Image (tube, one colour):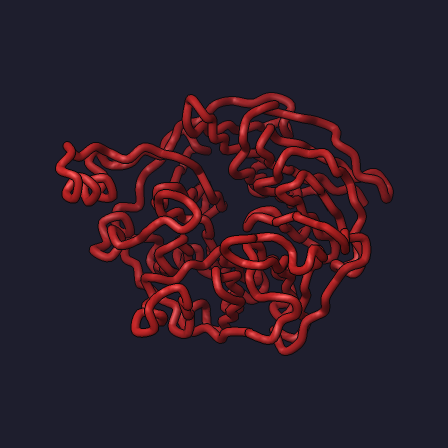
Length: 371
């Protein structure tokens, strides 16, 4: 068995390869440049890397040879007078100006040749020519509720999760931080704000159940059973069995329900992994013990996985896109803000440190064509 792992960091893209039981870094691309998203496309083998330069802004590159050479793509652009800035202008008296792309925060293959991209400020875009040209999904952008989206950890709201239903690619569910969960059943022509049962404890009690004020940190679905979804929310863990329409909150999880990352097994909807932490002001592992939690029964019970993970004075935080499971469902990879990278090849029971000296890890993905 041989697998390949792409790791996007604060200082470039690392491509790792497995040989027998060992993993090693075989390539480092875009040195010094933040990589906000990576997407290997199983349909044509194209590899996409989204960068966020400090001075030059967002960039998108693609590679047709597994990262040996790269070509710069086009970028999503917003309307000339984006409404988020117009709202600001109304309150400050300044002349309205159009928003500019800060970050590509999500990428996902769609039907045919279509690519989907979620951005900061919160927008959904698509490309039908491998990223050369991008079109804004205006139906979502122009929704009357969209200007009420607000930033969570970022200045602007961000669209970070895109779930395309493999049974019907016109059914797409996206999550926005902070702006809730949205779903289309007609390929993006119209959208519904969904998510009954989600709860926002950071809002006043009478607004805690507002669908619009929810802060999902990450939304995932089980590819073999896409009606089963999981959300790692700002204040908890939620599960849906009907495609995101209704959610159940899971509260009894040791040591915490706060976190950013969640991964679900590709074939077993009841099997999911989370990386807990102390929320808000501190954002560090509980009592300095870095653990992964795993449920195998749909959230009724959780295992606290510690083998191979630091249990003293650990300050690792795993961002929302930095925990991944391979297409078979047995190998997991996880990278932290302190540059640690771990692999588990037995469903999380045991973890092995691959590197302790990487830059902060933003995202990682297995090559879906290599296993």
